Length: 149
Image (cartoon, one colour):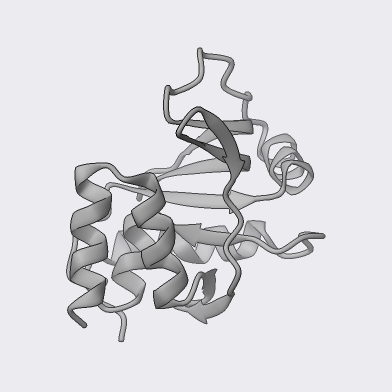
């Protein structure tokens, strides 16, 4: 099922699984890495880790990372956001992710959780819904590719 040919992505996903051991709340890998884990051949530029704000802050603290204090993205915001700059892939840690849907900030929490490649991801239908909500051209293309499986 996995369409990840790059060993560096696999190594980074393993590191994510390790750092998330002991998390108190559910967590997921979303974005291109999750799409690839479902079997779509796609480029994985970074790994998007979605966690609760408490678990994200715990990870950020344990890894000695700084919480990003930049102005929020016009479409997305997280209560906690940090980048884990690894040699194999950057991991973007998002705690309490929300998306602006028609002027109202809505929390993004997948409703399903399956293990693929050693990490938790939303199931295919749930991931497709999340990608639709994100609505950017790259997200809609990933959704189309998932639907074609």
